[in-house]
Amino acid sequence: MRAVSVSWRYGIPSIRIHMLNSKHNDNALQGRTILRRFSSLHQKLPTQMRAVVLPSPGSVEQLILRDDVPVKKPAGEEVCIQVDACAVSYRDILDRQGAFPFIMPNAIIGHEIAGTVVAGGSESSQFKPGTRVVSLHWAQDEAWPSPLTRKGSVSTMLGLATPGGYAEYCTVHQSAFVEVPEGWTSIDASPVMSTFGTIWQGAKIRGRLQAGETVVVTGATGGVGASSVLIAKKLGCKVIAVSTSRQKKEFLESLEPDDIIFTSSESPDFHKQVQKQGGAEMVIECTGGPTFSSSIRSLRPEGRLVLVGNVSNAQAPLPLGLCILNSLQVIGSDSIHADSLRELFKFMGSTLRPNIQKVLSLDNVKEAHRMLESKQVCGRVVLQVSEDTWQ
Image (cartoon, rainbow, N blue to C red; front, side, top):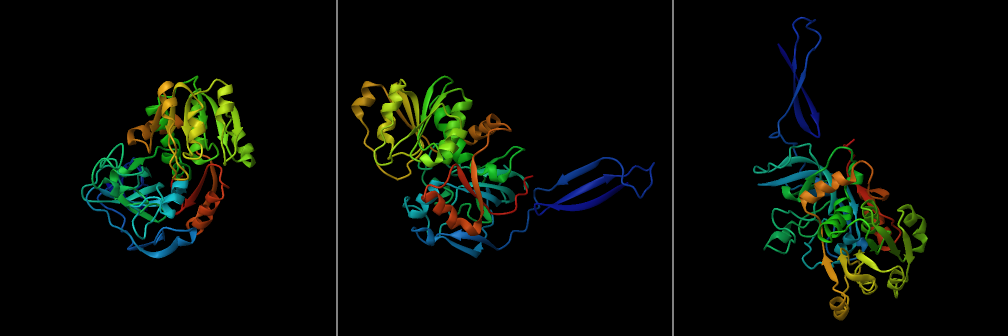
């Protein structure tokens, strides 16, 4: 004899079939409970949602919170996720300012997303409803290692060419997401791809960073920079952290680099101090134009400069003679492959986590942008879009 009960989680019906033991009182449900979740039964999506819309690039005042933005229903291989959290990065500032000419009108920016799958298109099979995921920069089935390698694939770039995470729901191709293991909150998980992930792909996989090497990290108080210090230390490297923010000394010291160099933002020349220590096998360049010249002069012969950021969207002169004579490599790297992100989650285990300075609501998105622009942030600011159901 069996009894059936229906419960709801993440808006998805789950049917529990209770096997009754006839040897016991019929009023007591005994035996093993079988949980059957039907992936074909999706949450009935709302027609509208709250979202921060950017009508056109400009100042922080261009960010407009609306509650009547249409929710896109997933089609084909797309999935729709309920956004639990979205981290705010400096690329969001550049996106808002119009640094990328292909940004869509009325854009919903935000590309560091953690959420829960609530619905899928007729051909989606990668995730079941209820799966906890984080975003990649774009849909990797469309193109890898760059969204520019195939015509049309740039259309899946979250926050630029397709709506991103400053919204209650996000719908895009399923290959733009990776499942998150147990033990993570959505707040901690949201920035992992862009911070630790970018460095893992650039420095560890492409740059072949090894234990015992000396590594210089520029912009070391930012989300990517702080993650660079933590990863390099865990890999057994000597780390020299570079920053222009003396007021953030205590935060830098908490990351436990082997040395800290404070430099001027007008004329950074930290390479002189680095070369006094014998130079570096690798520089992880998180700020780009402002520090590039001193970074490449910090390298030992056969050194590698891993370029992962350019906060001013500037061009930088490349000293060709120095690169040739010292056999230097400049390695550009963006995002992380889905398989590598799964590997990274294992590496991080239960102890290594992003530095989250502040958690704000979607209503306070302008405050988050102002904090980043005024260099008040150590690590990441995260927008909590929905109630965190991960724990």
